[in-house]
Image (tube, rainbow, N blue to C red; front, top):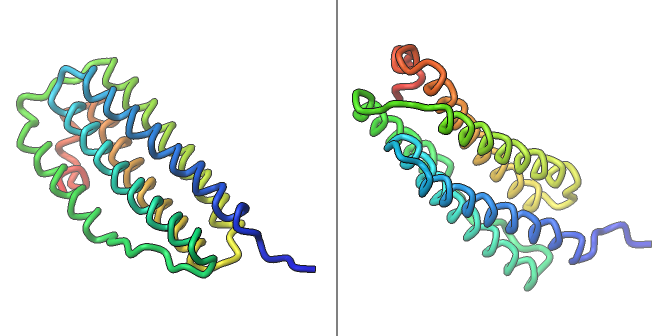
Length: 174
C-alpha cells in the first residue's frame, strides 16, 4: 500500500490557495477604490500588489508540481518583503500630518485582518499535512507573508484607534 499523497491531494490545496489570493487581491483593490484617504488607499494598493506576488509564486509552484511531484518550491525572498514593508511605513510617516482616520477605515482594516488570518490558518493546516519538505516550506513561506500582512493591518487598526500614539511607538516608524 502506498501512503504517499497522489498528485491531486497536493494540487487541490494549491488551487484553493490561488483562489484565496485572487479573492484577497480583489478585496484589497475594491477597498482601495472605496477609500478616500491616502493611508487606507496606499495600504490596500500595497496589499493587492503583495497578493499578485503570491499568485505568481503559487502558479509557478503549481505548474512545476504538475510536471514533477518532486518539484522544488519557487525561490522566495523574505528580505525583499521586509524592505517593502519598511518603505511603506516610511511613506506613511511622511503622510502623518495629512492623514485622518474614520470608522469605515477601521472596518475595512478589521475585515482585511480577518481575511489574512483565515488564509494563514489554511496555509498552516496545509503545512502540517505536507509530507514533502518543498511543499511544507512553500506553505511556511505563505504563512510568513500572511503574518506580515496581518502585522501591517494591526498597525493600521492601532492608527485608526489612536493616531497620535501610533506615531510615537518606535515599531510603527520602521
